[in-house]
Length: 217
Image (cartoon, rainbow, N blue to C red; front, side, top):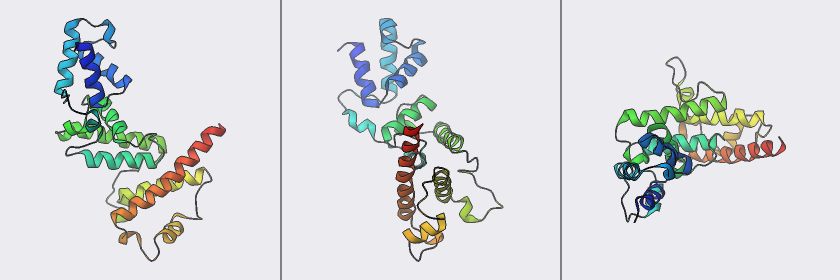
């Protein structure tokens, strides 16, 4: 198999999209096109793919699932961004492409050092704050009540604000809607699954509302 073919297999296995692949080429060789590279430059790209975890013979699907010590936090933030209507694709594959752009590391399972993971984590948070206009999202302040420092509640409130702005809120207030969805339960009584159920329901409604607004624009 030629180096050119090996590169394409490696990119597919590691879940690189076209733009992400060109970013990798440029980082390694200074050139964004395989056609313009010399054979030594092709080999340099192959070596970098191996360093990032490319293993010939490994099925590409396994590279599309996030894993590693920071995968859980990254997935939670990514799905939160999807439910806020910021991320257009909530898959692990899309998340890992974003991680690659932020860190130069193609798969979340290779984020072994906190400083590398922090780049991706903070980039997602900053993106969500910018797109939603909520600068307090994913922030804690000592003077605030515990509930207001709960990231899950912060996401829920931000979802609700975006729905209100789109005239698509399903009830007169967030509290009234939560009481209807989770009868006889205070926010403090909600289990993790219940929080995700609420965010997922509002997320679907918000994405639909945003799509309608875009179609009318």
